[in-house]
Each structure stands twice: as structure tokens, then as C-alpha cells.
Length: 621
Image (cartoon, rainbow, N blue to C red; front, side):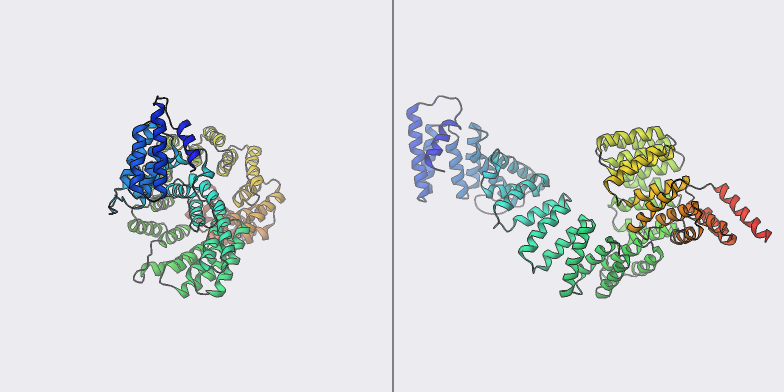
């Protein structure tokens, strides 16, 4: 700082309204000038003495102790720097230099684990460390307040790192963005910015930052892998295509690299190339079968094609007899889901129980176990499992929701509703809380209340697609079909490739036998997006059935029924087309599977009646 500017600041900014004799002010200036001169000549002892004399002469000039504190900081005398900066702040709490010094001192205790003047380290307690981070942030924010972009880049970099340590990524990002642009030679900056983006799940921004780094270091395979991973998480066809191209290029030089093969399988799967994803996963297993990640990728690829028995065939032997050091924990959920999908509920429950034993503190595994018990209609066990997990995770919305479902299905809907009404009060910032309460209202035939809750949610989260979807579903249950269609059209206006909305809208039209050509178009588009989805195949088959296109109906319904053997509605649909084609034995078999399946959304008496009608047809032959 130039002396003239400092004196102006000393006279005009850092002095409270307290009268100090002019002669003492003048002598203080002289001592300050001397201190500054001595400091420039590396005479720290003389400079400190002059600063102290200036402070005695004019104790109301905060800039004097602030400059002395800065000198102590340069001398690594942290305790003196802190004490002197605190003196300055007692006079002028907004003094930039004193706040800068105090912020750096507290930051040093965080980074160094607590460094005293002797330079010896000591381990700081976590609470004390958190307190020092908060103090460092507060003082450095005051140091740059109103002039962030013009402030010392080292101060801003320190503040940015502190934000990251405190998980305040939203504050770190704009600061790091400016620094990365203004200080292109700062090597740590781009990766710190990417770290903040990734913690905030801003994958597109992270990918853009990686792209800049890859352009600067085009031969870095590691950067390309990270770039591809960010593109994969960002999603979208363009990003996924870029990721695939990056990974293909990397595989030309590292054809057996496990990470690259894993990312390639994931990318192929998300691009809709489930067969390619499966082949790449099997290649990864061949190259490195001692880790679970090839099997994990294989399970996801097979699940994408709804090949649940193949998932079981691939994972069950590995889980039953793993090699030493092989972690089966990541595979057990996939194996449990596969058992659940084929209707083997006991094995599904046993598998999730084993996963829970391996990771007892994971609430997601607890929720899978509850869902498996619900699917098996073991409602008491589901309630018990949910309550046990909620004892450790009392505010976990997913577990509360599952416990409420179990209570409703066990004949206690009011208790379930009360649970979710209480959850909404605590989780009003989460759209899922509105959806959960609306669903249990609708299941309890209280659809007007369901609509009200969803509309309240939409007023708070107007762009949330899940709320639109659920409101459309409730309107459908109320037979308010134009209102239901309007909600699904809102979704498609935002996201024309939303396969779930395309399927719901197409099936809703097919179920009513209305605008069947339009229904088929919606459903074909859904299947272009998810070609192996059994529910979508059923919807398209049902639309063809309603249009009396029986061959097309049979083809799609057969594929759906083969894939989802435990789905009662799909088996009933398949029976309908088989009966109409005169294949009465096959129709009886399909309807029998419907009665043995999950039982959801079918009239058992009506299915029994259809079986008797088919048997009468056989007797007439």
C-alpha cells in the first residue's frame, strides 16, 4: 500500500469519533512511517517497536494494529498476529486488513492441525476445527466484502478452500470461477472448482470444466476418464455419445483397463445398447474377475433387458462362494431385486437380510428389505423392519413412506396416513413428501385430499415433473381424463422423451379404447426409448388388443408376460388375447399365473370366471 493512501485511510476510515490531540496523531503518523520504512529494510524488531509506539500515541487508529498484525503474520508469530488483529477489530470491526490477518490465522490452525509459535503440530478436536473454519470464513468474507474480484487472490483462494472444507459448495463455486478465469496459472483451481460442481451434482458444469482441462492436456488418459464419468452422470444423448467416444479412444491404448471398461458398459447401457453393455461387462469380468464391478455392470445390463433369471444365474454362484477379498455387498441388492422380480420372495428377503447384516447402518438396504416383505405380503415383518431402521434413521422419508404403506396394507390406513401427514410437516422442502401423502390418500379412496396435497406441492415446486405425474395419475383414478391428459402433456412439453409419461398416456387411452392410433404412437415412442421394458410392451400389446390387431397384441403381450411372470395384470392381459385367438389352454395357464402373482389391480373373481369360461370352450370341442 502506498504511504499516502494508507494515511488517507488512517485519517478517514478507521477512526471512531474520539478526539485524539492533533500533535499525537501527527507523531503517530511519523512512527507509522518509520515502522513502514524499517519493515521494508527487514528490520522487523525496529518496525514492531515503531508500530507499538504509534498505537500508544493514537489508540483509535485501527489501521496501525492491523498493519502490525500483518507483520506478525509474515513473521509466523500467530498468537501475536491474532491478538493484535483482535485489537484492531475492537476499534473498527470492518477493518479489511485485520480481518484478513485473523482469517488467515484461523485458516492456518485448520490446515496445520493447530500450529503454535513454536511450529509444533497438535491434533485439533473436530469441534474446535469446525469452529475455527467458521471463524476463518467469517473474517475472510469481511476482508473481501464489497471488493471480492479486486481482493488478494491468495485470500480468495484460501476462502474458497475453507468453503469446500465446510461443505459450502454454493459459495465456493462463484469464487473459484472468478479465480480460475483471473489466475490461469493457478494449477489447483480447476480441480477445486470441479470438486465443488460434483458435490453440488452440477454434472454438466463439471463436464465443461473437464473439457477445458482435456484440451490443455490432450494426452492425459486420467483426465479423459474423469471427463467421461462426468458426462455419464450428466446424462443426455449428446453427453453420453461424447463419453462413449472418449472411452473408445482410451480403449485403443488401454484395452484391458478395468475402469474404462466399466464406464463403457455403463455408457452403452444408458445409450440403449444393453447387449453392448452386457458384452463389455463380460469382457471386464474376463480381465478382472477378482473385483465385483464387472458383475455389477453385468447385472445392470441384464436388468435393462429385464433378464432377471440371467442376473440370478450370474450373481448367485459368486455371492455363494466369493473368492478371498471379494466384496459381495454391492451385488446383493441386485440379486435380491432379481429374486423379487421373478416372484421368489423368500430368497429376495434372505438376500436383503444378508446385505443388511453386511451394512447395518445403510438405510437404503433397510428400505429394500421392507419392500421385499411388502411384495411378499408379509406386512407385519415389513412394519417391524421399517421401525427397526427408523430407530436409527428417524427422519428417513423413504422408510417412513414404506412403513405407512405396510400399515395401510395391514388394515391400518389411518396410522399410515398420520405418519405421512407428520412427515410432510418435517419434509415440506421435499416434493417426495407430497407425493407419498397423496398416494396413501388415493389408496384410501380419499382422492380429493390427494389432489389438494399435490396442488399444494405444485405451488411450491411448479417445475417438478414427479408432482405432475402423480397428479395426472390421481385425476385418472377420478376419471377426470382431460385433466389427467393435461398433466401428462405438460410433462411431454418439457421432456418429449419422458418414457414413463408416454407409457401412461398411451395406456390410459388404450384402457378406454379411445384414439387408439394415438395411443399406439405414444407407446411405440416409449419403447424406442426403453425397448426391453415389459410394462411398456404390455401397454402396446393391450392397445393392439383394443384395436383388434390380435397378432401384434399377442407378440407384445407374450414378451411382457415372459418377462414379468409375477405381474397379475400383465398375465391377465395375455390371457385375454390368447382366449380371443382360441388358445384356451394357454389362456387358462396365463390366468392361473395372474391369480398366483402379485394380485395387484385384478378382480380375482372375474379372473376365476374367465378360467371357467375357457374350460367350457375346451369341453365344447
